[in-house]
Length: 488
Image 1 (cartoon, helix red, strand yellow):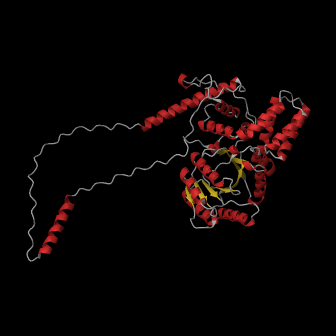
Image 2 (spheres, one colour):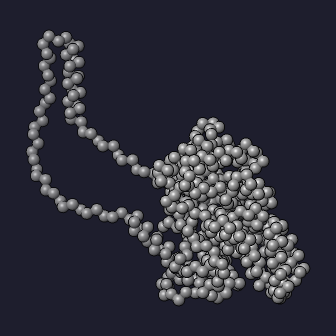
Image 3 (cartoon, helix red, strand yellow):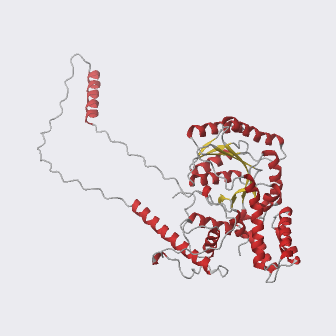
């Protein structure tokens, strides 16, 4: 079953509390347990409506999974072949075997010539009696899967949190998928390092009393330590101080207001771009250039994007235009094989990247491909000649495919914190960036850099990666990101 990640519903402006749907009760065997399994205790902060909604979602997904298993088992079961009617074969008496006649040697031939003629005649008789055996058909080798499809786990805290996040976005039970539940669980776990110090100290700072100016001072330190950035921190605190001057703000209300402010910072450049969710446009060539410094994971990100496009039902092609780094082309080819995507490359040493892109665009136009992903060499934003190379690649694309939708995406390593922000601001000036892919959120406590990139560099976050698996990269959703950042 194909799930189109590029066409998810955008986050709502005003998330709502989940309300359980009035639907027919699922079969008893498909119901979620009334009490979560011992793997994780039932979260105490989820209200009853949200918990009921999560139970219904769990029962529905469980029923879907069981139905898919039965369909797969039925398809795999060999069908019995009809038994043909028995045929009666009449008994026949074989003809008596006649002894092979040895040809008489032709007159006038020498002994050697006679022996050679007899050998030739025996070989001809053997060929006439030989029966041709058809070659056995070669069975195709199934492609190895890099990662198993998501499966429904226990009705635990991860599931209830994921269901609550989807319900708060106005999703209906009939619309949610196991792919989304699986990704939200990965995102929540991936943000653990950023959340560990930030949320614990935030709750300790807020306490049980209404917010005070002293609490806001402590909050400022927490935001800066999470690499949210000076400008973003100032904007959040200014809004909180204004709210505090107007009314008494209780801790729970303060957290909700903080979430709204952080989400607003992330959404501002996305709204300014006019594109809520970056997706390939069908019926038109889309070219996405992946740029960034060395070591941030451009090639890996490109491979995951290719896999995401294929899983979402788009045709894709990769241009291996990083012709300088050792084994870069081979690495791209491995990712192409894992995702079933064609890779256009030039095996020559120090080949011209623009020539590779030229060939890739031509191949994509001939095949009617939806998306071309271009892997580029890592470069520092201060290297003028390398930045000019990007400009040359862009000129090639504009010349060959003037109607193509071109995106220039900067890949940033979240663990670099404020250094990543400096890269974003420099590349934005030199390379005409249209968005950012934030990777390695699971290995860093600096996930707040996403807010700094949005507010100070003014660049929309388009994709985020929260793990090393091929499924651990998904389109960015500001509501889900903030919920994962501040999850208890």
